[in-house]
Length: 342
Image (cartoon, rainbow, N blue to C red; front, top):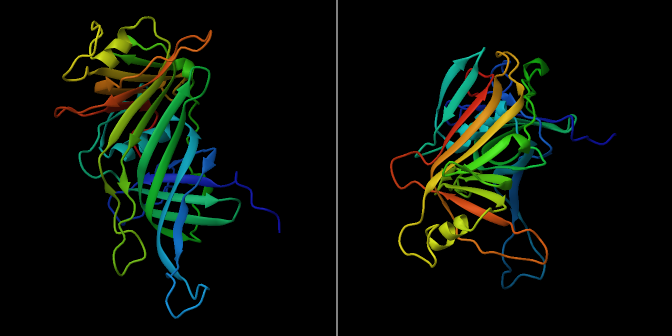
């Protein structure tokens, strides 16, 4: 029998209307998003339950039972703006405000939910005919974006699911709406802090929902639910500074200070702007795919300087998103060719 190849597999995602209700990503050509990815997969996380040694027994393990089961895994992909809207909405939990038209592109403005985030239905085909899995009640635990100045925009996302069915019927190939929008380059990405461009060689963005993934209940093999704990949103950048003002602000508490200050940290607006070089196909000439990530209140964590030989001074900084008021901690506006987020 020939080996199973990884590349013929696929991954489809679709936002669920309610918990427990699987919605096939490929039910129609406009149902869900099918993602090209470089590696990853949802795995069944399960252990054999082995009893402790008993007095009166022997040195060997007498038996083992099948323990409860959950599903989870990481996926790595080149970020594209059609499926990115679905992932961001699932990670933040809020609904999107969809505006625009085919000729101007559709803009999806996504804000975070204060409570539970959205469930996804996932169809995963592993290898060429190895197996077909349907997952119900899947949540995005973490979402990571990164790009270097000389690289592509990459995304890593961690999914956790409650229910898996193996041997499912795959969707009809004609209904697999793959996101084939253009890849995005670091040369078309900017990061600003307090309306000033950061001299960044690379950037990253992390959304962590800190899902509780061990909520097993008596009488059930599967997770009862996936509960969100504290949400953490951080940005990172490798920068080459033009002066010492950013270091003083982050470390001392004021760009004008000559020693450490007490009290509140400095909070400024941080914006990541991402634009494609290519036009949106159905839109008028010059209309590009675009994403704008806005964090109204962000503080740079204190960092140290590390001179080394004849190296150019540069630093890896971390920016913490904060929500000291009722203002949304983050807003993400994504322009693509989809009328709605799938």
